[in-house]
Length: 459
Image (cartoon, rainbow, N blue to C red; front, side, top):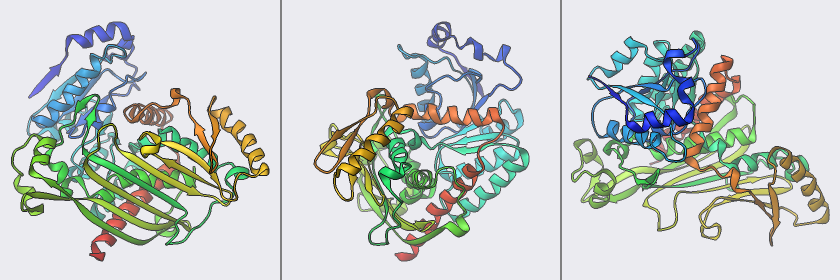
């Protein structure tokens, strides 16, 4: 069944946002037309929190009826009604049981947006590419070894058909990560990249997430399958996708990585987060565990293998990555991130704990202390940084310096989805993306799925 979602707020928004340029009636032949397929995760809606030049304001949605689709549409309508920056999306929704076949047959757009059940995602990617669609997919695109093999084939098909398959790596647009990378490129400041050892890695990234959280100001209701690692994927292949991507992106910018030669997995482990039935109900609004979760129930608790750690080398550099999921963050806190890059001259560290007010801050801590020579080199390097990021400054502390970042650069996680989408639209306009992007996506999913295999073998 097809439905057209058009609320009064959309009409108002179109009148005051100038988005009529994006209407399908006067669209250019090369206009981007979005299709949203089975939006089971709120990231699908975040792609549409902004409008984009050259993108049709009508989006075709193909999905089964139910709470996931309702939640997606509620967010779209919320963005359309935003009093400060209203969007103007018109959603044409098909909810028949044959929603996938209908999407493939109707070809109502040229870019498929995927964010939902990760077990199904790789099949959606494969069928979309085979049918001639470009694909913008939320992470992870593969959650196990079999999915990785399918993903490699999907990239081969995309190349043959001149299509672009890309995943949504929002953390590349987080300002402390961006500046950590920029400072690491200043040889007089950072020095040479340390190689490290298995016991003392040269790069460490740790991420803490929470099952119960707020999105766009509202409590997030998770689908029950989110807690089934057979459908969502384990933590070691989910959030770790971002961490692996950042390591590749910062250590070897614009360089292709060959997963068959450049990566050596050393060790990996996985462990569960226990969640009570009351917590499960709070997160999902369901009073009982679905049958497919019974395999993970121990007494009254649900055990979710959402935590994982891996140690590996990337082109000889030792890296350690870990992800931890708790149920809910303490009041006034949220998801946190820790990252350290070790150079021969300094350590670049992102901290986001209590001392930072649970906001990410970047620190520069020279290995040999704050010598006059190092201070001079840092001040010269700061000028280079300021050429690209005006008004970024430094504040001295006991161990070195804190990087002072103006508020204008602190967009927040939800805004980063627009940055990724804009980059993808740039690729579409150019008709291609850098070769290293494809090889590094393949390398990234090899890393996460190989870590999962090793972690399971170790138990």
